Amino acid sequence: QSALTQPPSASGSPGQSVTISCTGSSSDVGHYNYVAWYKQHPGKAPTLILYDVTKRPSGIPDRFSGSKSGNTASLTVSGLQPEDEADYYCSSYTGRDNLYVFGTGTTVTVL
Amino acid sequence: EVQLVESGGGLVKPGGSLRLSCAASGLTSSDFYINWVRQSPGRGLEWVALIKSQNHGSKTEYGTPVSGRFTVSRDDSQNTVSLQMSRLKIEDTGVYYCVREAVGYFDKWGQGTVVTVSS
Image: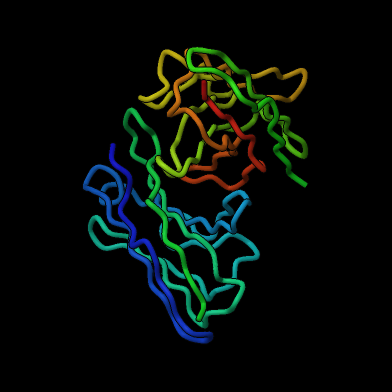
C-alpha cells in the first residue's frame, strides 16, 4: 500500500486560510470515512485534530475543518495563527494487510 | 489522565532483536486496541502492528514489512503492551510510538522511543 499523497509544504499569513489535500485510492480514502488528520511539532508525537473526515476532538478549535471528495480528503485551517506552524499528516483505514496508511506529510508555515 | 509511555529503544545491529514496552496509565490497555506506529525520515509514518482488546480476543495484526519478524503482546497484570522485534533490518530504524486506537483513528500517542539499526 502506498502512502497517501500530500503536498510537501503550504503557507499563509496570519488570519488567512490554508488547505492541505490528501490523495489516496478507492481502497482507502475513497472507500472509508475513516480519514483522520494529525498535527506534529518537531520532536514531538503527533496529536489528533480531525477524525471521521470532519469531526474534531474535544479542545480542537473550529478553525480546523475537513472534507472529502472521491479519493481526496482535505484539511482547511482558517484564521492561521503562529501556533498552527507544524507538520500535518492524514491517515486512512484500509481494511487490508496494512490496516492504516498515512500521508506523506505537509509542513505548514505561517509567514 | 491517559498516558502511554514507551521504553526499550536503542542501538542494535542488523539481524538483532529488541523488545519495546508501552506502559499505560489512566486506562486499562486490555479494554482498547493498542497499535504501534513508527516514523522515519525515509518512510514517514507507518503502521506497524495492532493488538485488539480482550473483548475481541486480543487478536494481533501486522504490517507487511514486519510480518513474521515482530510480535505484539500484552501483560494485563502490568497494564503494558510489548513489541518484540527480531531479525531487525536497517529500514526498521525510526521512532516507535505506542498508540491507542478508536474506530478508524488514533486518539492517544505515547512520546515515542528511538530504535536505531546499524552496524
